[in-house]
Image (cartoon, rainbow, N blue to C red; front, side, top):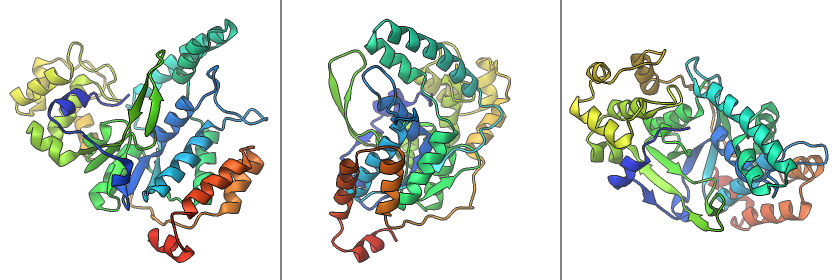
Length: 344
């Protein structure tokens, strides 16, 4: 879902569109679940079904992960993927998403039977979900590619933000703005979906470019603290109170937070809080999320044979395409020693 901050960020010129080349030599912590969900949502056949091998196993996520990661490496970007752990007990959006997925799955089947392929594609995207196979097979591929991944104890976005705070990475990457609420110093959007995208049900294509959003700039422009940004999130809706307060959008929420000087008790006396969880607990969760120091960021050389064994031998990818992709990365490094030094 994500926090609805974009209208405010656009109004206050907090979003900087850049070329992907501008991120060269940057270490970027990528919200793995967010990226994998994009891949299984976007990479589909014409009838809406995901890419699959002859055994019926989904491969959309592996295709996206491999080729997009190769593209990042080609552009000198050093990705670190961060996986979600156990969600907090109050994450209500999970139940809401599951109900919507079941409804979308039924509509997908109906549209497919009736030959309404464009509708089927729309419903297929809404019914997409991650499972253990998708998660574990993606980790296996990253290991073969020499790309580090971190298992977060809870929310991946929170762990990504923590890595920026510690200075272990230069930025975090996610499509959701929640990363800013968790304290990410620099958020990069559109990193794993950069390129031309077709608008739903329209024969129109748009060019998506990476976007930079600096937390310090956001807080300075809005004249807020991070707690103030969190309060805007609670008023408009987060993954922990998805519906937000009825009738309050980002701009109205901003006015309320400013008017009451970020005093949550005054705000929620005026604006009734009708959620099971205490808002103090949510504020504290964003300010002090569950993260870990038990990780090691180490880049290794790509093991070409292991990659081919996974993608070509096991999941029936085109050997020629995989070979060409691997050559593209090698062509950007003049020697093996330079490749090694690049990842230090």
